[in-house]
Amino acid sequence: MARLLARTLIAALLVGLIPAAPAGASIRAPEWSRSLPTLPLAESVPPSFLAVVVAVAGDEAAPCAVVFAIADPHFPSKYHRARWMDPRVGRFSATDPHPGSIEEPLTLHRYVYAGADPVNNTDPSGLFFSLSVSFASFGISATINAISVPITRSMINATASLELVPIWVRDRNWKGEPERPLLPFPGWPLDEMQSHLSNARSLWGSHGITLHIGREIGPALVGNSTIYSNDQIPEILKDPTVNLATWPPNKVPVIFVRSIGGTSTLGKATTNPRKPALVLMTRGAVDSTLSHELGHTLGLEHTANPFGLMFPVNLGQTYLSGSEVAKAREGLLIRNGGLR
Figure 1: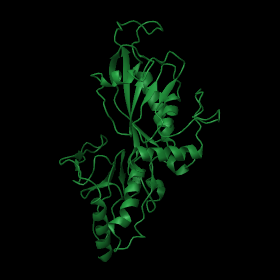
Figure 2 (figure 1 turned 90 degrees about the horizontal axis):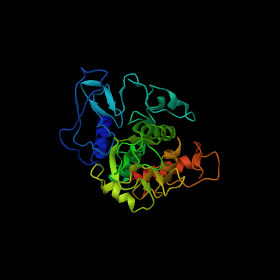
Figure 3 (figure 1 turned 60 degrees about the horizontal axis):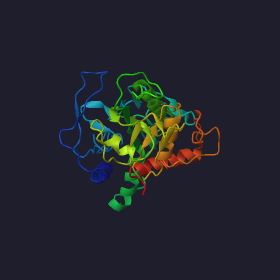
Figure 4 (figure 1 turned 45 degrees about the vertical axis):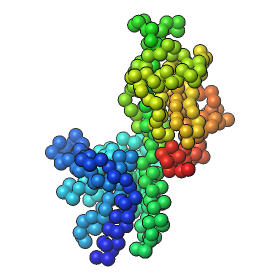
């Protein structure tokens, strides 16, 4: 009984660290079972997190709930954002949409929860696992100040991501002509935009950095889709179809234009992870261009390695060193408010 009381107290302290979400929010069961109930979200679940620490519920026979999962006492599976997980067998109900990394073989298993080590790891997103916060070192006398920093940091590590906002640009005087160098620009083909976005999501996902891709916005009608000056960017962002005046650091507008300054530049991006991000993609972009520019938004600089993703002449290279991955993850945490 004392152990159950201790666990409940720690869970209550943790939930108290998190702001309230709008009342009435809910999570629906996935399409694979339409008969499953709608699961109500606890009032303490914030919309900015993928999930939250569940209060330690149940009876003496099963006193521990899964960390960072949303639970329902009438439904055995737990909601982990991308997938549902059955804690009775320690397996997800669907394959992992995250590609995993060959450097970490356990991430290549398509169903296993938390790298088959739920004592030390968590997988709140259903995509990839991270080191869990251990409660064993905390006594009942631990104060909020003693546990709030590591718990909050762990949550941010587990849920940090970038949201890409693709913006479609077209010349205002385009009259239906085919795409030609001297004719008004009709805008990128949408399937090519999606291909670049998917390539970037896959490459960065293989290094444990999650990218969420939003719906295309536009077309933003501009006087000239060739960008000669930064002064042209506000024209795009103020277009009624875009209407994007401000955005948080973890949101990245990706503007698909014709060219930059009439040159062969493939792309361009802001480089300070503490400032709002912006990426320009030109029609000359190759498969790895967007991944390269997103590396800049995460704080990576150009490398001298001609086989590296961050080499200034981008010809499709995708290699990232361990130190570059570590720095990119740090930049991701900065963009998500985890580091100051």
